[in-house]
Length: 225
Image (cartoon, rainbow, N blue to C red; front, side, top):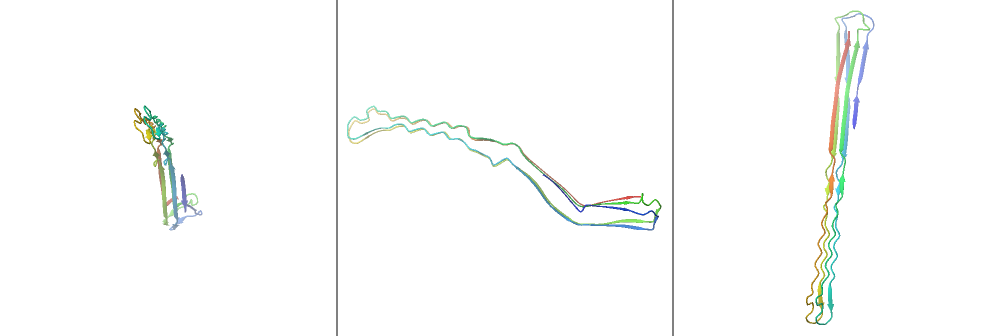
């Protein structure tokens, strides 16, 4: 982004009639004032990204063996079902951003005056005992704020979670009786799933450039004799 501001720029050109200039006084008075208020901003952002992880499924619970009522020798040699294994988690999300760049430039000029007095072409006669005076009075204020900003931060990458293994089955006899569950074995719990890669964020480079040029109360005088 570029901004050029100019204030009170003027060109004064003066010529004289054909005649001698003797014992003369030439005075050029320049009076300038003004105000420039300038704000230039540029911003680029490649951050604030979120890459979430993944979650594996949970394993199922194993089957249970249960005897209800009164009796003897229930559940002999019974085996409870094994719990299912937890699911494996896949890889998390991936975010890849390009480069972020911003550039802000401002050029301000206030009270730029050029005085051009041509005595050579309009006064081919003699110039003697004469004075030439330029009296400048210039004032002004330039208020300039130039900013360039880039961001590539505030990124969040979350991990992945494997699934939880299932619970093994149980052996249970309810009610009265004796010699129940002889040789019975409960099922084993399932293995938990493995986790995948967490989220991945890759950002490009961030570059910013800011430049400001201010010129105020510049006076140029040229006299051609």
